[in-house]
Length: 293
Image (cartoon, rainbow, N blue to C red; front, side, top):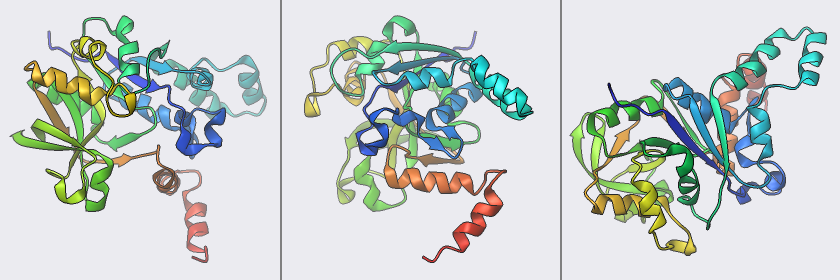
């Protein structure tokens, strides 16, 4: 049988401090892109890639995420039926039915490695994917599907790669030093975290999505806190690399990265998606053209 990925872990336990006060009581993953929350785009990517088991690692004040992917309430369905809004009934029912949702609370120190480690009881001894709940890449075929295809051929750790065209933005990401393997797949020799633009080894940013082997859990357990006293997933990946597990980057083809955890990029994303939304694109385009800017 051809090996595949059956589970995706979506860390969603952060405080969303960059969007305060909006995120004081509302998860940053639930910020809307026109009429869908950011995390729904992430889940839809996983489902479109053939993965149906969605493990969402949550924290306090994250209940709205569970409610969003739950079966709609009878009150809501009754209201929609009375208003003859059958299209909305289909839409809200589809959200709950598109995947198997599993929720687990994050436990442990701060750091993006902690939610991954928290998922171990559910993942067990199999490889799995990780995608952040406050950003996404819109691509065809889906980003995760491209990564799974590359991982099925090369194994190891597979990280999504995106070219950063603006040099000044290189200091925002982990940038790969790599050697070509095949087409859009590269073997990573090292990742330089947030380098100065003139010191970056390339313009290939490695972030956003990962396919990881189960050995990552032991690496995380043995990891000493790193920068800021936090547990960092890249540090655990470096442990695997030192153990001889190859690390690859899959440069995503025909895709665009949306960093919706950043205020400015979030607003750009809303505008871009509004301009393609079938219900409002025409009037919204007129509105933008008439702005005195």
